[in-house]
Image (cartoon, rainbow, N blue to C red; front, side, top):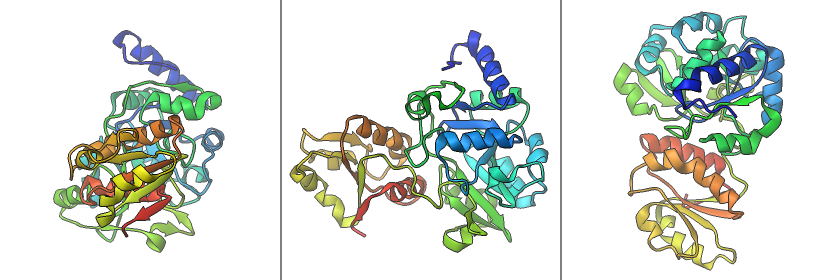
Length: 339
């Protein structure tokens, strides 16, 4: 593990990791969203090894990460004015744009699609790593496919261990949820995966119509246009029971009568009624999604570490950032109560 937090060693560790990437290796690194597992974008062999390390289905496309907009010419054939406006407004940051790809992008990286997702992360270590490597990096989350995304280097090491060549430890990630993924079609912004850049932010910045895109509208020749759309994702080994609407009032009682005590993730006022012998994880003050976004994956992983087999989770309001949180919870859920 490389720990580039000390200024005197940061450049050295990043240079070592960049050399590994240039030579076709795999490097896990922090971003502002979650930790990513990187390979150089133009190496089919490295990309194949990345898929194998994660156990990732081959029809689940990757996102390319850049350190400067000039690198877009290696990845993208053209952009519309609306796409350029989104880039200028939200990069560097947690927004992925799905764009027409160049011939230089291997089909394996895009699941054979004619498009590729691209973003510029807002993280100093990530940007330096990409810049020193000298080419864009394709990077999904640095976890075993299907498990909660990693928000610390420890999570990465737990999942991937010696399957990868290096791990840059940048501490806990700032946001805790994967990037928002959008595609522009006919001057409409379609959200393929919600994230910290909300539909309200997209609409306010551009004045364009913003819609969710699911099902057939989010597929090309049967392959999903963005990661996280097709398969069960973000799920711990414990069964996840999500409580919505009126069902929320039953969380405490359900937790108390379980034969084997579950974990509970809920807002503070709900947790106040949950028995003390139950493992409790707070979402903070009611109505706020920030804590849920930042801590959800870490909570789910800690619950697995405790050996608990069930977790009861209170839904957050599905607006703003809450839309992204609920997207992840629905993907992870074994059962949803209150629908």
